Image (tube, rainbow, N blue to C red; front, side, top):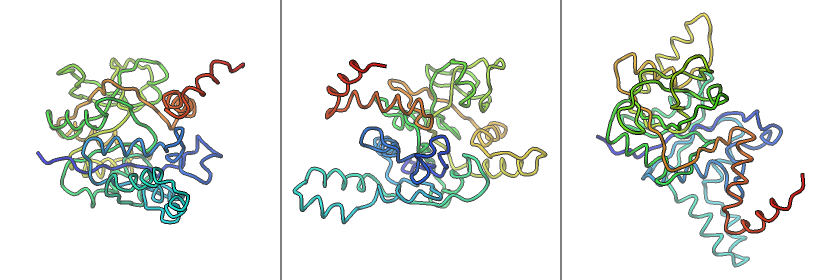
Length: 297
């Protein structure tokens, strides 16, 4: 089995739920205290040995590229001010991995950016992490997914959490199947935002996947079917996974353990994440905690 060395991070969405804040900046660059959301995602990938990161971008996403680049002018100013610790901090961001950028093109939907990375990924398994959510876990989410993929193989290993909250059935895809080991579900079907219509599962496929290269022709087939249907819609990764299952390929859902899911594409969950990380931040935790305790609503 080939080593997983590459990750794809789709980051081309418009972030309309965060307007007007995202009118002139990517939602992936919204800060969690002093670090943008997408940096947490990249750090997660790197923690699992990922070397090459393909970020699929679009209009108004240049600041993502700038963030993971060497800012010569900023370094010069920091050097003149004697801020050597800050210099090392910003240099380490650029050194985390080899970064590649692809502009998204093709039909609307979250399967398209995965397909756009095909030429860079080639014929090997790879990791996909969304640019606006992450799971803060130990071991890291990416490490758990890659370890599970190395153990079970298959065409897809989908990162999951267990949740039965009614609102989540309207927000996430849910996998059904047979639990072959604690936290490992062999998928029989996966349904996007099923609602509470008798879906007997609590495996919500929310964050991160390891795919084999067979996902690419499955996305192409899903795109063709949707475009030729009487009800055109977005092409989503769920469509491609169901095609893999239809072809008899093994797909799994892996429950990410020892962590918490942060859906930063949702305003309320984003604010909760900022508060949680602020309370853990070594520079401000004491003062922030005191502020919250004494705050009058």
